[in-house]
Length: 268
Image (cartoon, rainbow, N blue to C red; front, side):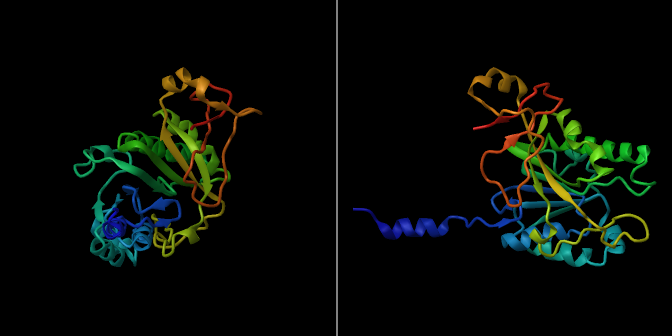
């Protein structure tokens, strides 16, 4: 005879999974360069807890209070919800940070990375400066992932931002694009994007067309060895996959120049 009372009790104890945009309350998430910490707060509020989050900033706590009118309040709410908040964390060297070097995450997120306003965005020196920031971030983030973890970068997709070529930068650290989805700020209630630099640091900026680029570490040798078990798509390289809602199943991997393969594959 089955004890239905005990089974029901076990089900009630199971953790309720909540989704906010592309993210789940069951994922261990590291947020990098979060401005006024409003994105982290949007996740924690939607999850009903911030215990699965580590939210970081390059700025010190005192600098954040001066730059962003909502930072102090956002940080206080995050701490009450159990979020670990760290300051003085450099996206380029975060793997070496005392509080991060022994941890691993399901998701490492860097929204709208920017190296600072030091010229016009279409100038080569600015593009190179941004690329250097993102490249070093990928290097460090790749070392903080759990097995099957992902690095997410939300980024503008029009010129000159597309010239940053995120896929090329990520591929240097065996990170390859598994999915590209529309970044919709309305999916994260309470999130306020900030300029983050200069006299207007606390002001929002026009997002325009943005995507979240999702990268995973791919074992290239293993992929080639098991190529017979992969389903090859016809018609050449699949450049990207655009979806408007979270994808929680297998996704097309875009194989770029870093792999040297002229087709895309579907992982099972």
